[in-house]
Length: 629
Image (cartoon, rainbow, N blue to C red):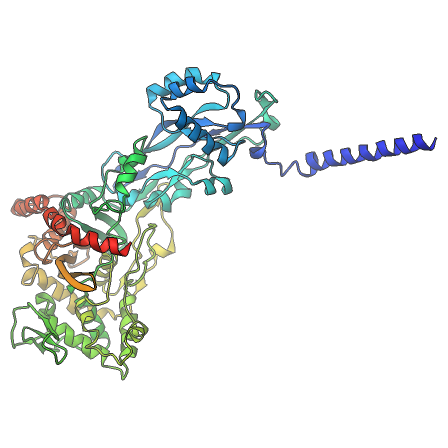
């Protein structure tokens, strides 16, 4: 009797335990059950269309096309004819084994891409045969199509998510695509949409037996939202043509909004090169660190150069704000500026005015080094300690967005460098002075700026003291952006009245100064040419290479519509290459065409190539690069 009771008791306990466990699994944890990680549930994905991308005038820049991927779920692959499948897929057996192991290492119970982007003919033929190979199926996917060979650096591209992200992020599976650069990366969440999912039960023979939970967890796909960019694709393409055979960057901004009208890096590439089955082969070429052209390196956002003479306007504004100078202050130029007792302590000048008083307007128009060296010295010597004065100077300069990432809506960038007092205190053991840092007077020395920073600086001058953060997206799903970062004015520390004399002087540059040969009839252009010295160090010795050609400008003088910075590597004087490119872009944007009288200028710039110079100095650049590595 006791034994029977004990037996019934044990059976009851075990029964209660199993009932409790089933209750816990099905009721308590049923809500949290994840069918994705259950081999008894099959998931079919329905991929949405990625959002389209347009320019400011509605021109289509990025569209979609269908792609077909061969997928594999390793735990379902049993008793297949590997050689026959290899023949169908047109791959070797060793390649098959490598791909299959990669899929197994990712997850045996999850699907992943086995072979990407089949040709349409291969897809049609394979679809009829694939039912013989358990665990393999074809997945339709949306990839990008670029109707125009333009703005690759702005648009970016899409590529596979890495394995770590696929494992840890529920929004992605192995082999799925995401934005990698440009607006594709920055606006990934908006562009990608949401994929639809359908869940199915399957038995131990891996056959689908019906909908999981009667379809309660199924979701429909949501298409990505369209983007309208701020760029004018006609201006963008024209700038790319003008930069053909040259290296550098061009950035054009609408001063009244901060909208980027053109963002050009040269050399660049056709965005369609990073689409389709040739993507891997092309990416190895484009992204090769030993490729001197660096076509995927965005010089407009990343390349930090000495700004040269355009920075003289910055020192003029700081000098006026700090009462170091006024519009009537004049200095004499004796062919340069002597800042020390040595014969080499002499900054040469090419303004062409010798032993005559030079005031601000003429100094900017003729780009006088002596004038701005004296101005900088008066700014730095205003306080007892040079570091205190330089901190004040730094505060004014950085209020224009120089020395920072600016906050624009693209993933690439460089802060450049605007030194402060602490920077020089750490570099010099002894006391330093204005003479020690005199190269800052003319935009050389330690100062580094990017083309987009210079374009924004020019827009701030055009606006007489404020700017809007540059941005590349104008509308999302046809609705104007409402981001305060891009719609609220950023005030500089310079009072508005001090911009008037500087703007007048910039206008004089194109009337009688260094930009006079690049005038455009009927358009009042305000600008400043620049020639930035270019040095490299080899074996500890400083060697000079051909100068960079720079120009910043805005137009028209009243109610400016465009502000831009043009930077041409090793292009020489700013007046010879950067100036004509600038005036052509301004004329093209404001008038919509190039006048007959400027057609020769256009032909010269379109046909001008600096490739011989780049090839000649390639060994020196390569030597520096190898030493850095």
